[in-house]
Each structure stands twice: as structure tokens, then as C-alpha cells.
Length: 179
Image (tube, rainbow, N blue to C red; front, side, top):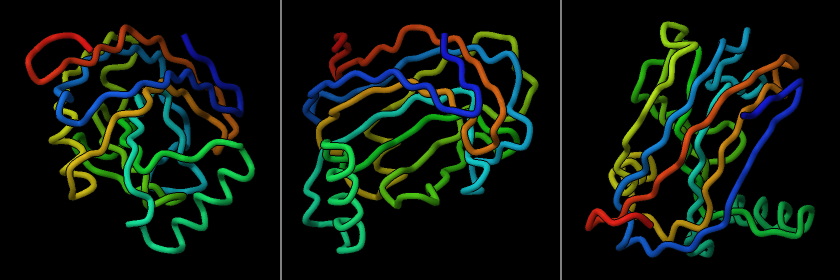
């Protein structure tokens, strides 16, 4: 369970999975209600009651200079290098499912809307996603190694409250075995 009160809650786990092993991710969540005023396409209202984030490694020297400078600043402030790219599966208030949203804060974060609107609030929602296909669709290139998995509930931009229940996150290899 995650709760956010004008804040963000995140649970993350570091992993190291070679891109040739990546098959799919299976996950579930239940959200009681949407966040009033949230809009993932608006930088100032970019909140979501439920997100699954996949962080990927890669060659940061290939990125534009502006992005590398932002990465250096983030590392100086946090003591940790940001991922090369982050793919998120999100619940949005109104954007159509399968829409890809480019983050207004970083061009290295892309979100795929897997649930939209309030029709399914209060119900467990289950998903199976092809990680490599989704990464290629959102970033236009093959992924590097998967280096992190996170669950996030956030209401910091809208200054409101959000909560979500999360089920197990399963990473499945291309040959069907569990990673």
C-alpha cells in the first residue's frame, strides 16, 4: 500500500538484467479514486495514483549535452547517477490508454498510459507488458540493461492525497522463466 499527502511515495529495487533477457512485466494495482486536477501532460499537475517505473542503463555520452548537464547536477545533488532512461506505466485521469507521454521534466522519462479515467477505480487491474516492445515504441531504440523497478503514488504537484494498493511485480524472461 502506498499513500501520498501532497507528496510522493516510492518503493524501488535495484536490479541488473541484461536486455537480451528482458521479456515482459506483469503487475497489478487497485486505486480507490483519481486525483482531482491531476494531468500527466501538464508539468504542474503531473500526478498519478499508481505508476510502475522501469529504469534502464545506457551510454549517457550519446545524450544531448543539456541532458548530460542535468544528469551531472542530479548526481551532485543526490549522490546517485540518474538512469539513462525511465519507462513508466501510469494511470491518468483522461488521456487515452496506450498514449505515450513525454515527461515535461526530462526527455529521458516516458510514460505509457495503461489505465485512464475513473471507470475501474476500486477494482484490481492486472497488466502484462512486453518491456522491449514498449521501450522501443517510446524511446525509438533498443533498451540497455534494466537497473531498477519502482512503484510510485504521487500527489505532490496537485497538493492533494492519493493512495494505491500494489500487487506483485513479476519480471519474466524471453524464455518464460521468472527473473
